[in-house]
Image 1: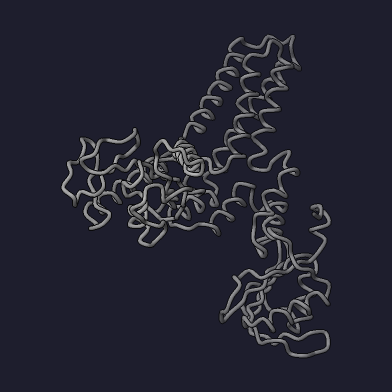
Image 2: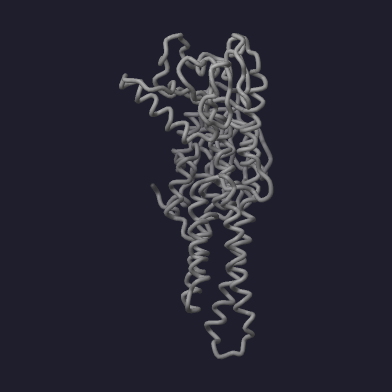
Length: 432
């Protein structure tokens, strides 16, 4: 991996539009030679931020394409550098020819996430906003897109920048107490510092106690469907997915392993897991399937236990579904009666599952955490605040405050981030 300084000396290019058959392909160029490359390719520079139709030529003068070109001088560009966009005809031949011409003029293909990495390094965004771009590109549902847009627009960054500013103020006052120990400072000064540290810690704790709603929405929920053999779990999963996910047979133990399918409920991506029938068995393969079913159910965000109407209440679960009501059996108290065969009750079941998905990911107040690294850094900051509150000497308290600021800064990229940059930006697609 190239280090940041070397990366920014290069002029890079990449496709910003997706692969596949299309009318237009957008190629981005960014770096110190972007002006020279565009001038050579397009026969001169257009006016800044104005789309102009030009013939693109290689170093021999051969026409490669007629394309719209845009000149985007820095720092008012996505990366903060001199940049350009080429709106090409989207044939492979044109794209390859233009790429070869750019290489001949000194450009190089961009690495994954390199455009956004340069934007971060040039102060155009912080790490939270950069991660939100990746989340927005990967969003499967409108709810995921809304969460990513909110983070991309700085809602989550504002929370952490506010805490960082308050920590800096506390540290500055603490340093003053250390530097001027002989001054007759009012005793309430230290009391105010301790109160502010305690308030910051409480706010961080409340932020962490969000039920992982942001992470669940970003990654998707897992709903496990459990129950004894032959209660109709696979039929129910097939009905909810509206396709044949699992094999349905009258033979008990047909499903030996967990089968997964992705659906969307209330704008939230949900993985439905069809598990092996829960029963005691001497068959080692089926027994392993039962063990995995119980483990998968224990890890799931929501558990649906399926029983046969008229044959008992089943195991404890978030929702008990009595299947095969078309056979006339009684629905246990508190259970939802359905028929996977006829479709009876399935609309009510979908509505209840959607409400569960909505409840598990609902958001109010400050924007939620969306990644495990945010949670780890906040826990580290809280640990240091605990140390500061308990420190017996002012110097130790100041050191804990500095370490708390460093932990908080790792979230937005203010301090100590070089070791995590590669992990973040390598997840991006080429051209972003």
